[in-house]
Image (cartoon, rainbow, N blue to C red; front, side):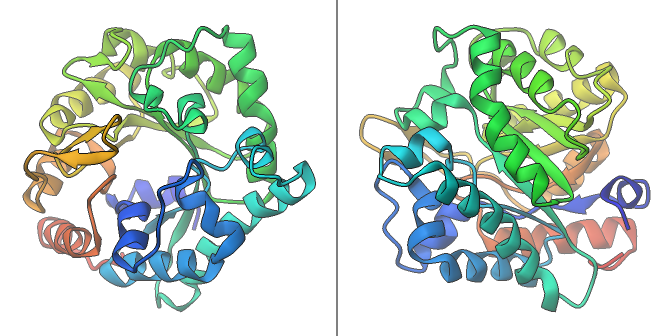
Length: 304
Protein backbone atom coordinates (compact mmCIF):
# COMPACT_ATOMS: atom_id res chain seq x y z
CA UNK A 1 0.00 0.00 0.00
CA UNK A 2 1.25 3.46 -0.81
CA UNK A 3 1.91 5.73 2.13
CA UNK A 4 -0.64 8.25 0.87
CA UNK A 5 -3.34 5.58 0.86
CA UNK A 6 -2.39 4.38 4.35
CA UNK A 7 -2.80 7.90 5.69
CA UNK A 8 -6.44 7.91 4.63
CA UNK A 9 -7.08 4.91 6.88
CA UNK A 10 -5.39 5.88 10.14
CA UNK A 11 -2.59 7.96 11.64
CA UNK A 12 0.83 6.39 11.18
CA UNK A 13 3.46 6.16 13.90
CA UNK A 14 6.88 7.53 13.04
CA UNK A 15 10.06 6.39 14.75
CA UNK A 16 11.99 8.42 17.32
CA UNK A 17 15.48 9.86 17.36
CA UNK A 18 17.99 7.69 15.51
CA UNK A 19 21.02 9.30 17.16
CA UNK A 20 19.87 8.70 20.72
CA UNK A 21 19.13 5.06 19.94
CA UNK A 22 22.62 4.64 18.47
CA UNK A 23 24.20 6.38 21.46
CA UNK A 24 22.23 4.15 23.81
CA UNK A 25 23.84 1.20 22.02
CA UNK A 26 27.28 2.63 22.80
CA UNK A 27 28.17 4.40 19.55
CA UNK A 28 30.13 7.66 19.60
CA UNK A 29 28.44 10.27 17.40
CA UNK A 30 30.54 13.25 18.41
CA UNK A 31 32.06 14.02 15.00
CA UNK A 32 30.57 16.31 12.36
CA UNK A 33 28.95 13.47 10.41
CA UNK A 34 26.87 12.45 13.44
CA UNK A 35 24.90 9.25 12.78
CA UNK A 36 25.75 9.38 9.05
CA UNK A 37 29.30 8.23 9.92
CA UNK A 38 27.95 4.81 10.78
CA UNK A 39 26.69 4.35 7.23
CA UNK A 40 30.33 3.88 6.31
CA UNK A 41 31.70 2.42 9.55
CA UNK A 42 28.96 0.30 11.14
CA UNK A 43 25.86 0.05 8.94
CA UNK A 44 24.45 -2.86 10.93
CA UNK A 45 24.22 -0.60 13.96
CA UNK A 46 21.83 1.59 11.98
CA UNK A 47 19.80 -1.44 10.91
CA UNK A 48 19.53 -2.52 14.55
CA UNK A 49 18.27 0.95 15.54
CA UNK A 50 15.60 0.81 12.82
CA UNK A 51 14.52 -2.64 14.00
CA UNK A 52 14.17 -1.37 17.57
CA UNK A 53 11.68 1.24 16.40
CA UNK A 54 9.76 -1.15 14.17
CA UNK A 55 9.52 -3.54 17.11
CA UNK A 56 8.24 -0.67 19.26
CA UNK A 57 5.35 -0.18 16.84
CA UNK A 58 6.65 2.45 14.41
CA UNK A 59 5.10 2.29 10.97
CA UNK A 60 7.72 4.53 9.35
CA UNK A 61 11.50 4.47 9.72
CA UNK A 62 13.51 7.58 8.89
CA UNK A 63 16.87 6.91 7.28
CA UNK A 64 20.32 7.82 8.61
CA UNK A 65 20.87 10.33 5.81
CA UNK A 66 19.94 13.52 7.71
CA UNK A 67 23.56 14.63 7.85
CA UNK A 68 24.76 12.63 4.85
CA UNK A 69 25.79 15.05 2.11
CA UNK A 70 28.31 15.09 -0.71
CA UNK A 71 30.06 18.06 0.87
CA UNK A 72 30.13 16.61 4.37
CA UNK A 73 31.48 13.24 3.29
CA UNK A 74 34.05 14.90 1.02
CA UNK A 75 35.54 16.59 4.08
CA UNK A 76 36.12 13.11 5.49
CA UNK A 77 37.80 11.84 2.32
CA UNK A 78 34.78 10.05 0.85
CA UNK A 79 34.33 10.66 -2.87
CA UNK A 80 31.08 11.39 -4.69
CA UNK A 81 30.57 7.85 -5.98
CA UNK A 82 30.98 6.38 -2.51
CA UNK A 83 28.72 9.07 -1.04
CA UNK A 84 25.96 8.14 -3.47
CA UNK A 85 26.37 4.50 -2.46
CA UNK A 86 26.05 5.42 1.21
CA UNK A 87 22.92 7.47 0.56
CA UNK A 88 21.33 4.52 -1.23
CA UNK A 89 22.48 2.24 1.57
CA UNK A 90 20.61 4.37 4.10
CA UNK A 91 17.34 3.53 2.37
CA UNK A 92 18.25 -0.15 1.96
CA UNK A 93 19.04 -0.50 5.66
CA UNK A 94 15.69 0.93 6.71
CA UNK A 95 13.85 -1.19 4.15
CA UNK A 96 15.63 -4.40 5.12
CA UNK A 97 15.13 -3.74 8.84
CA UNK A 98 11.38 -3.69 8.27
CA UNK A 99 11.27 -6.99 6.40
CA UNK A 100 10.67 -8.92 9.63
CA UNK A 101 8.14 -6.52 11.12
CA UNK A 102 5.24 -8.81 10.31
CA UNK A 103 3.18 -5.90 8.99
CA UNK A 104 3.40 -3.25 6.34
CA UNK A 105 5.92 -0.53 7.12
CA UNK A 106 7.34 2.40 5.19
CA UNK A 107 10.66 4.22 4.72
CA UNK A 108 11.19 7.99 4.82
CA UNK A 109 14.51 9.12 3.32
CA UNK A 110 15.81 11.96 5.46
CA UNK A 111 17.24 15.14 3.97
CA UNK A 112 18.35 17.55 6.66
CA UNK A 113 18.85 21.28 6.12
CA UNK A 114 22.02 22.96 4.90
CA UNK A 115 22.87 23.82 8.48
CA UNK A 116 23.08 20.15 9.42
CA UNK A 117 26.01 19.76 7.04
CA UNK A 118 27.76 22.67 8.77
CA UNK A 119 27.38 20.86 12.12
CA UNK A 120 27.41 24.15 14.02
CA UNK A 121 23.82 24.39 15.18
CA UNK A 122 22.80 26.70 12.34
CA UNK A 123 19.90 24.44 11.38
CA UNK A 124 18.22 26.04 14.39
CA UNK A 125 18.83 29.54 13.03
CA UNK A 126 18.66 29.40 9.23
CA UNK A 127 19.59 32.53 7.31
CA UNK A 128 22.84 31.06 6.00
CA UNK A 129 23.63 33.92 3.64
CA UNK A 130 22.85 31.76 0.60
CA UNK A 131 20.27 32.42 -2.09
CA UNK A 132 17.36 30.12 -2.76
CA UNK A 133 19.07 29.02 -5.98
CA UNK A 134 22.28 28.17 -4.11
CA UNK A 135 20.37 26.14 -1.56
CA UNK A 136 18.52 24.31 -4.34
CA UNK A 137 21.86 23.38 -5.95
CA UNK A 138 23.04 22.02 -2.60
CA UNK A 139 19.97 19.86 -2.00
CA UNK A 140 19.13 18.55 -5.47
CA UNK A 141 21.98 16.03 -6.02
CA UNK A 142 21.39 14.29 -2.70
CA UNK A 143 17.63 14.20 -3.24
CA UNK A 144 18.12 12.69 -6.70
CA UNK A 145 20.15 9.83 -5.24
CA UNK A 146 17.74 9.24 -2.37
CA UNK A 147 14.75 9.25 -4.72
CA UNK A 148 16.51 6.76 -6.99
CA UNK A 149 16.77 4.39 -4.01
CA UNK A 150 12.94 4.26 -4.01
CA UNK A 151 11.90 5.26 -0.48
CA UNK A 152 8.21 5.68 0.17
CA UNK A 153 8.66 9.37 0.92
CA UNK A 154 11.39 12.00 1.21
CA UNK A 155 11.56 13.66 4.64
CA UNK A 156 12.57 17.29 4.11
CA UNK A 157 13.05 17.91 7.78
CA UNK A 158 14.17 20.40 10.41
CA UNK A 159 13.79 23.27 7.94
CA UNK A 160 14.56 26.53 9.79
CA UNK A 161 13.36 29.18 7.35
CA UNK A 162 11.25 29.88 4.31
CA UNK A 163 14.21 30.43 1.95
CA UNK A 164 15.32 26.86 2.50
CA UNK A 165 11.73 25.65 2.18
CA UNK A 166 11.46 27.35 -1.21
CA UNK A 167 14.72 25.73 -2.30
CA UNK A 168 13.57 22.29 -1.20
CA UNK A 169 10.22 22.66 -2.93
CA UNK A 170 12.10 23.39 -6.14
CA UNK A 171 14.61 20.60 -5.55
CA UNK A 172 12.00 17.83 -5.25
CA UNK A 173 10.20 18.68 -8.48
CA UNK A 174 10.14 15.84 -10.97
CA UNK A 175 11.78 13.25 -8.71
CA UNK A 176 8.76 10.96 -8.76
CA UNK A 177 8.73 10.42 -4.99
CA UNK A 178 6.39 12.27 -2.61
CA UNK A 179 7.86 14.32 0.22
CA UNK A 180 6.93 15.81 3.53
CA UNK A 181 8.15 19.26 4.55
CA UNK A 182 8.62 19.84 8.27
CA UNK A 183 9.88 22.98 9.94
CA UNK A 184 11.69 23.38 13.21
CA UNK A 185 9.81 26.11 15.01
CA UNK A 186 9.64 28.31 18.07
CA UNK A 187 6.16 29.39 19.04
CA UNK A 188 4.27 30.47 15.96
CA UNK A 189 7.40 31.16 13.91
CA UNK A 190 10.15 29.36 12.06
CA UNK A 191 13.51 29.39 13.80
CA UNK A 192 14.47 32.25 11.49
CA UNK A 193 11.48 34.23 12.70
CA UNK A 194 9.00 33.98 9.81
CA UNK A 195 5.32 33.44 10.65
CA UNK A 196 4.19 29.84 10.26
CA UNK A 197 1.21 31.02 8.26
CA UNK A 198 3.68 32.10 5.57
CA UNK A 199 5.87 29.01 5.94
CA UNK A 200 3.07 26.47 5.63
CA UNK A 201 1.40 28.34 2.78
CA UNK A 202 4.45 27.71 0.59
CA UNK A 203 3.63 24.01 0.48
CA UNK A 204 -0.12 24.29 0.03
CA UNK A 205 -0.07 23.98 -3.76
CA UNK A 206 3.09 21.88 -4.14
CA UNK A 207 2.04 18.62 -5.78
CA UNK A 208 5.14 16.81 -4.58
CA UNK A 209 4.42 17.55 -0.91
CA UNK A 210 2.24 14.86 0.64
CA UNK A 211 2.40 16.21 4.20
CA UNK A 212 3.58 19.33 5.99
CA UNK A 213 4.28 20.04 9.64
CA UNK A 214 6.94 20.35 12.32
CA UNK A 215 9.77 18.40 13.89
CA UNK A 216 12.76 18.91 16.17
CA UNK A 217 10.87 21.45 18.25
CA UNK A 218 9.49 21.83 21.74
CA UNK A 219 6.40 19.59 22.05
CA UNK A 220 4.53 22.50 23.58
CA UNK A 221 4.73 24.28 20.22
CA UNK A 222 3.62 21.32 18.14
CA UNK A 223 -0.14 21.13 18.70
CA UNK A 224 -0.87 24.72 17.65
CA UNK A 225 1.43 24.34 14.63
CA UNK A 226 -0.37 21.16 13.59
CA UNK A 227 -3.76 22.87 13.64
CA UNK A 228 -2.36 25.75 11.62
CA UNK A 229 -0.72 23.49 9.03
CA UNK A 230 -3.91 21.50 8.55
CA UNK A 231 -6.01 24.65 8.11
CA UNK A 232 -3.64 26.43 5.74
CA UNK A 233 -2.58 23.54 3.50
CA UNK A 234 -5.43 21.03 3.65
CA UNK A 235 -2.74 18.33 3.55
CA UNK A 236 -1.97 15.56 6.04
CA UNK A 237 0.18 16.92 8.85
CA UNK A 238 3.41 15.44 10.20
CA UNK A 239 4.55 16.10 13.78
CA UNK A 240 7.54 14.68 15.61
CA UNK A 241 8.85 16.99 18.34
CA UNK A 242 11.89 16.54 20.54
CA UNK A 243 11.72 15.26 24.10
CA UNK A 244 11.33 18.83 25.36
CA UNK A 245 14.98 19.25 26.27
CA UNK A 246 17.02 22.00 24.62
CA UNK A 247 20.17 21.45 22.57
CA UNK A 248 23.13 23.60 23.61
CA UNK A 249 25.19 23.75 20.42
CA UNK A 250 28.19 25.32 22.19
CA UNK A 251 28.39 22.69 24.91
CA UNK A 252 27.05 20.00 22.55
CA UNK A 253 24.69 18.67 25.19
CA UNK A 254 20.97 18.51 25.97
CA UNK A 255 19.63 20.60 28.83
CA UNK A 256 16.35 20.93 30.73
CA UNK A 257 13.51 18.51 31.51
CA UNK A 258 11.81 16.01 29.23
CA UNK A 259 8.09 16.57 28.86
CA UNK A 260 7.06 14.82 25.61
CA UNK A 261 4.97 11.82 26.59
CA UNK A 262 2.72 9.25 24.97
CA UNK A 263 -0.26 11.38 25.88
CA UNK A 264 0.81 13.92 23.30
CA UNK A 265 0.13 11.43 20.48
CA UNK A 266 -3.62 11.58 20.91
CA UNK A 267 -3.57 15.36 21.23
CA UNK A 268 -1.55 15.71 18.04
CA UNK A 269 -3.88 13.29 16.25
CA UNK A 270 -6.90 15.27 17.39
CA UNK A 271 -5.24 18.49 16.19
CA UNK A 272 -4.94 16.99 12.70
CA UNK A 273 -1.64 15.10 12.57
CA UNK A 274 -1.55 11.91 10.49
CA UNK A 275 2.17 11.12 10.91
CA UNK A 276 3.15 11.22 14.58
CA UNK A 277 6.42 10.33 16.28
CA UNK A 278 9.44 11.80 17.98
CA UNK A 279 12.72 13.45 17.13
CA UNK A 280 15.81 13.96 19.30
CA UNK A 281 15.86 12.17 22.65
CA UNK A 282 12.64 10.28 21.99
CA UNK A 283 13.37 6.55 22.14
CA UNK A 284 11.63 3.22 21.45
CA UNK A 285 9.90 3.16 24.85
CA UNK A 286 8.06 6.42 24.14
CA UNK A 287 7.27 5.34 20.58
CA UNK A 288 5.80 2.07 21.89
CA UNK A 289 3.62 4.03 24.32
CA UNK A 290 2.52 6.37 21.52
CA UNK A 291 1.65 3.45 19.27
CA UNK A 292 -0.45 1.97 22.07
CA UNK A 293 -2.15 5.34 22.66
CA UNK A 294 -3.07 5.68 18.99
CA UNK A 295 -4.24 2.07 18.73
CA UNK A 296 -6.50 2.58 21.71
CA UNK A 297 -7.96 5.82 20.39
CA UNK A 298 -8.45 4.49 16.86
CA UNK A 299 -9.44 0.95 17.72
CA UNK A 300 -6.84 -0.41 15.30
CA UNK A 301 -3.71 -2.46 15.62
CA UNK A 302 -0.23 -1.15 14.95
CA UNK A 303 -0.33 -2.88 11.59
CA UNK A 304 -3.69 -1.37 10.60
